[in-house]
Length: 459
Ligand SMILES: *Cc1c(COP(=O)(O)O)cnc(C)c1O
Image (cartoon, rainbow, N blue to C red; front, top):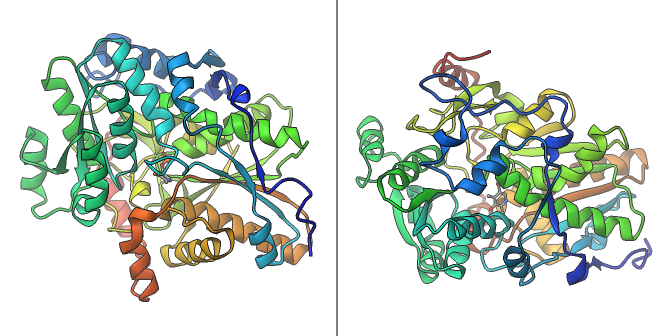
């Protein structure tokens, strides 16, 4: 049996140790992520072109590939203090259960009402919207975590919040919807009849249960049609990865306290924000040639952007109203099967992570739903926390790496991101408990059909 006091079960940082600046990994990237393109001119989007849609300060952050550290404004740090620094936990009980010589740590981001890391960026985006004197913001939400986080952030700064929620989640997760409404947000199931693009999508795909791509199109249109409103996004964009770097900075500070150097860092990947945030400071060291780490993205086999997608310019949304982003994509027309990790059902991936992956600086694995829930169940039973299905993709990948260590006898140190809790996902857990979960994986033909519709930009 292992010593359970090698390091504390939870490594906490003090309030003073809460990072004072976000870290922008782009500053250390030799190959910068490709710029967003205007779909009409195919030229990089300028500040002025982005202004009708996004908040000014957030555009500056989006376009800034050079500034390594961006100070966190005091009101945001003050809000962070309500739920940060978040603990880094040594998974002693999981290690023991697996009988692995590996040392496993997880950074737990589920300790706030929204239940996930998304609040880290929501509060920053709401703050900049408020500073600009805006009336409100529009957004989309898939599984509901981002919408919940944004409603909390908007109510804190007294901003109006309009959320387009993917219809299948709206219907399956009424409690998520009510949390958002409790924080004052207006929630509309998407696609809806309230926008032109929603009506167009409904006509083309009658009876569709929606997708993140559709909801994004509707939210962007809603923002551009109401004076004093801007659109905000909970993942994928460079600015969101920047805000989420707080996860990695805290993780690194906690590990440094005990001189722990991880061998493997793992995160689940939907649009890439938690993974990007978790790995940023470590990737920075890797890019500067100071240290090497294995970095692994865990994605669902049902929506495998990195492992089976194409690295190409594509629309960020289904309605093709957004700029083009160069990323690993399944095609903006790809609507993944209704899997239970709603927060990972996005056709694309952050341009930053896509570039890093393309340059061989990180790896990706895809994991099937039933295996993910087996990992979730094991984790819940030995570590106590009921994980979000999204987070459980990282748990699965971490367990698989720990089991490899068991075979080889290697004492590797594994760190993974536990992005949230799964209390609103009990319908999915119910299916798993009843043995009725399916493992749908798209065929090559389905993907090929979607790739054929990629915009013809590719340089
Ligand atoms: C949204 C979400 C994710 C995936 O989003 P990323 O932008 O890839 O981080 C993962 N876990 C939870 C709990 C989420 O809410």
